[in-house]
Amino acid sequence: MVMGFENKAVQNSGLTFILESDSRKKELAVKVVENIHKPLDKWAVAAILESMGLRDTDVRAEFGTDSIFHLAEEIYDICQRDEEIVDMLNKRERAREEVENPVKGFFKYYSRGLSFMFPFLGQIILLGLFRYSLWAYIEFTEAEATIVALGTILSFIMSGGFVQAASRDSLYYLKAKEYRLAKKSYLQMFRFQLLAVVSVALALLLLNLLFPFFKMKMIVTSLLYFILLSELWFALTILYLIKHYLAVVLVTMIGILPVWAVMNFTKLGMFNAHFAGLIFANILSWVYALLWFRRKIRGQQHKNPVKLPHRSIVAYVSSPYFIYGMMYFTFLFVDRIVSWSTVETNVPAMLIWFRTPYELGMDWALLSLLITIALLEFTIERFSSTLIPIQDNLRIFELGNFIEIYKRFYRRQFVLLIIMGMASVAVTYYGVLYLKRFDYITEVKDFFSNKVTFMSFYVASGGYFFMAIGLLNGLFFLTLSRLHFAIKAIGISIFVNLITGILLSRWFGYEFGVFGLLAGGVTYALVSSKYANNFFRQLDYYYYSAY
Image (cartoon, rainbow, N blue to C red):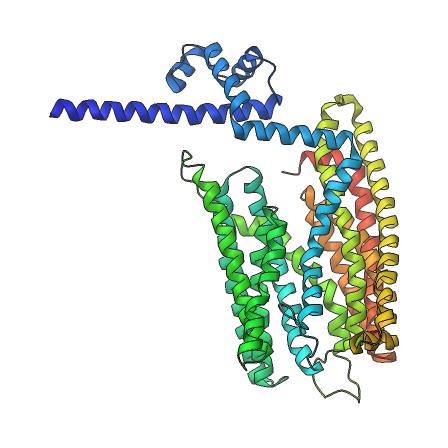
């Protein structure tokens, strides 16, 4: 019996060694591919293995093979037949083709950039079909719209920082195919985000108790929108990171089902219907993401348990991304807060009051921004994908050529963005204006009957156009970890936006607050372009010291 157990133990240990050896061979094959792309033959693999410092004695002890050349033969075979490695090689080949064929890359990545519009367009379609969407309702009074708008704006500002920080950390692990770490990182950031959102909601509730700016029912409803929308934006982010764009659209569209059920089979009202729909959409997002992680992690059982860096390190590294994310959405919405807080005799004496004509014009103009910034997906992908190939094809004495190549690249992208921005404004304007022929519909007639809507559109379109230039510059800073340029530029722009909007809205009327967005957008474009000029003059240094 004892001998039987000993033999069993020897067999198990031998099997364990074989399994571990196979997993290490695959990891070694991945390293070979990362070094020389697709190996020409086993001799090329052997050369790389030797350059890694491996000797015959090492491979016998660690991999159970007779020599470097026998191991190289096995590694070469893995590179030829392993599905994951073959897929990696195919992706690299496609990326190389896109570098050589920018037109093909443009259509691929511009269409991906447009995917951020799809949930927005989906909600518009739902509004047309049902008169309500996952968080909007055509028949809201201005008081009710104020409740929803405050919660929505606060959710974007509060979650923007966490979304940016989570995207930075989790995307890093996703690209490295470290799915356990990606999941842990995202869940860790989710706990931080949830705690922050709930804390802010409780603080605002307490503040309203001490200083009753709003009726208690109004502030509670608004804060519920704030919490549920904040969690939805954060939950949808992971679907964007894993590039399941269709899932984002489906989640936000299917989320309408509880809203429809509550509105048709109960008398709970639209607020409760929205809460049911948002909870359902949140659950769908998390279930989808967790199932995706479970499937990916299941294929990595051979990997050892891993740990995230200490929370203090994560906080230090992620804090610039968090700050930039919050500032981005603050810039986007500050003009609305300024305009809606303007005191006028024809509206109730409240701290904030939703102005429907103004918001319609802003949303109209926002379409042009979404069409324009879709280009940034192509720009940054091409920038990232060409850095290594161009660097490899230049000698050390051709540093000036490297910088000059990317100066020209930046100028081309700048001009392309201007053309795209002007075209998107024209398409948006005439596209929406086409709906004027349906003015027998009350909502359409009201939309085109107010001059404030047109004024907001014209000025906001200009503001968003210049904002897109700032975002173009900011993406280069983010790519090479130079967040201080982006933060400084957008910080100055928020200040200009706020001061200009306050002065003009108080002197001439609430609708003039939109000029704050225009002034801030121009400032953002000018300041960020100044930093970008310096950035590309010293691109070699920023590239070298990025990570």
